[in-house]
Image (tube, one colour):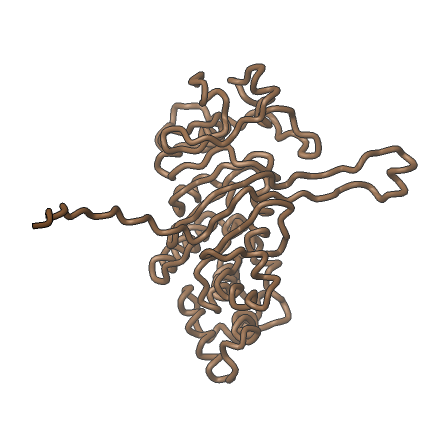
Length: 344
């Protein structure tokens, strides 16, 4: 008789992330014209707007990128949707190289699955078009709807999904408030039934009360449609409301990537701590508010070593000469020598 082998089960593999960004970089040449440089004997000036950013976003979740103005958040957003080509690195969506696919015949189909919501609802909508024309444009461009009656019905459904009246389709953008305009932008982004939305500070131009309404609509849509978000913001209070994972950027690089709860409960990087200390707390009535210290260095001439070292109270000689790598420490990715050495 042959021996009976014990029954064993293989552990289930974790699903691959929907979005995978690997060593993404974008450099802009901001030099003066060639003749000026020759006469004035000036070198070329290169701006490293994004410098080696890597992260993943699981399907149906929200990844937030936060940081002060000029840290490269919006450049990452434009790289994700193909408005910029990367100088280095790659963006993969559902296993496909985004930029290679955009340049191929399959690019049109991929663009239906990836859409963007822009920051300024006053600049992103054509003032000469009706709302029906604005929201219906993606449907026409991608050939999803051809009949006028069907287009009108579909636009009405999209407007209803963001809390607007289908009868608003005949109006123009100037007849709406800022919050309503951003709802129109969201409806336009949803027209092709995308799976991934890149949201570039979609609430920063809105009043606080209106921000909450727009954010709640976005969360409801995510639950109903299984959407995946990259949410760009400088407002940590907004990020806490919408995100599952948070990446903190400083001068074009990620300095901390952490689950939302972990980041707000136990921030690791000194810059993250500084940003959180600057948030007014409702219940801390007797405590002084700590402002963000110092100024962001000139991105054309960043400091050597760790870019944050001129503003960091924990910086030592190693921080001034050696650039820290993004290491995984206790399930949190952080780029800080002080954290690595246990000095915090």
